[in-house]
Image (cartoon, rainbow, N blue to C red):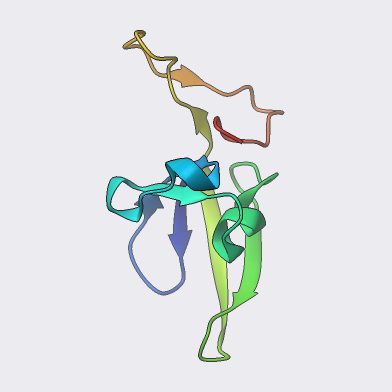
Length: 88
């Protein structure tokens, strides 16, 4: 999933179960506040969230894709109607 927060540059992350989370690899747990908020969003949708400092921010989803299965080098795009990233 690629998104652009109003606070900076676009970011690409993969939503994963908590045991697979590793922020240095861009793997965000579905149980984190941002992971939970991103579940179910499609490209073009946005969400508002409140940061730890109390300020409100907007995040725009640019792309939702499904990682290729292990052993497959081709990146498969999620259908436009799909709103959940792989690993969720």
